[in-house]
Image (tube, rainbow, N blue to C red; front, side):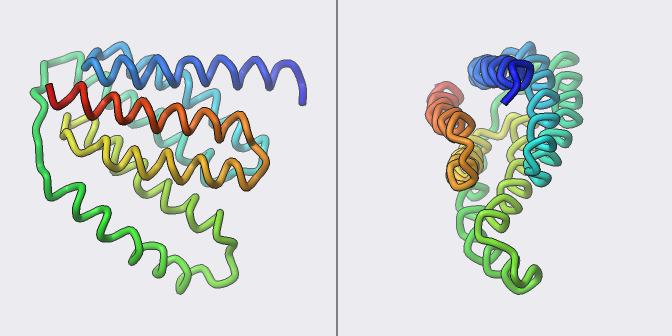
Length: 177
């Protein structure tokens, strides 16, 4: 692995942590850290052949721009919709089975990667709208990402996803205050 890739991965990782901490604290600068982090990770994922993860990162760059613009123009109060978490946790097995039917022959890590893509987009929109249950979906996304990264031998990325999982718990706590 080249030095440039390692440095890019380190910078993207640190900015990803900064993003989650600032978003948990409802600070709009978190979106800027997230945009840069996701842009770096998009390049790294495509380079590694993780196309779905690369797509997630590009979509997150675009959603990050929207989130930053929304959070900069007004203070959005945190809203709670408890049914949101329940619905998306209940749908998880159905989505997995549906992907098995639609994409016959695709590996289980690829199916999980597709679920991470779907849930990541939904979780980001919920974050932008400051809906508290976004953190429940981030737990799913970060858990899936840790599993798929580990299964692909990306141990640093898997470790980072575990850190993100813990930071999602921190975000849940911060947004309940």
